[in-house]
Length: 405
Image 1: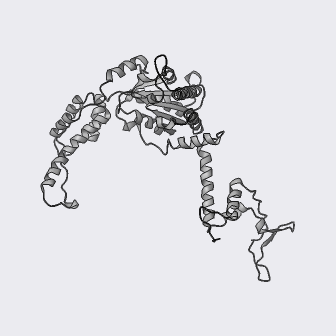
Image 2: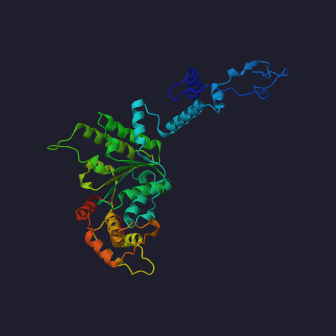
Image 3: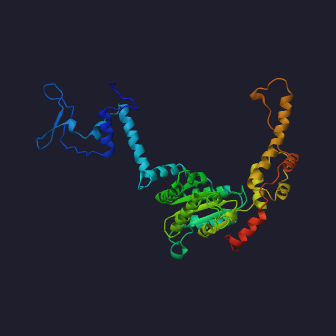
């Protein structure tokens, strides 16, 4: 056999080293007057025995194997064993102690949906939405910062629903909550908790909440929750059995979360709040409307995306704010991108008319955005999130959480 075994074939000694290292063989403490194992005796030969104060002789081969292989810094197999031990320790910290290997495997799959690191989304980076930010701070941020005040009747809200037109900043608000609170952020969608195997969907829901409790304080963000728990089937409505079991398990876990004192929050987002089941709506105690941007927020977006260049013609921000009443945040970004493309199109036309290819270091600069470019962009980009705006307002008046001024 070769001196260093391959990564896929271990010798018996290599496996014994790994087995003893993983399951822990007791390491005896070294006596104070023990000589090094390779000490040279008076006749010039090397001795491999050590003695203690009781004059008992112990061979170095009796040392713990764990200590032996840790002293072998040049063996590649030893380095692989150390790496495996570190992975085992990280795995123990990542998942709680599940009752079966099946549940542990489901927990490992859900662990991939944990957002690693800080999302780095500040409240200041979200333009407008002052009412939504204030309600979120009251429901999630303050109970984590000042838990002393949120006890008894003032226990924190465990379920928060963000509803509103598409592309208005619901996901950004969820990331801002995770950044501000420094919580473990679970980014969950329908693909994370729906399985083709019978019984796995409800098990995934249970494992998800167990993981959230293990990593508390944590935030479970359920994006497009209407795809997971829409209205349950009744008379005249067909629904698959697996879908009913999934919804029932989610309702049970949410109910248990509301009765506990653990800092685990469920933050859900949807564009169709009227499709949610009534039982789930009761468990989502805070229902916050995320509306289309207000005039002040739209002006701040335009000034950030299309900054005024020194010495150039002033941009008509007032006209932009007035004519973008029903635009969402994404529509405003597309509008600014279209306006910035106009001077680039003029430059590309000039470059394409030339026969030779212009070297990269000799390419001319792109000109500034003009008011005519903005007028062209307003004609090309139309709003896309205004169709159900009045319906959101009515739903907010019926079920939403309001701020009394």
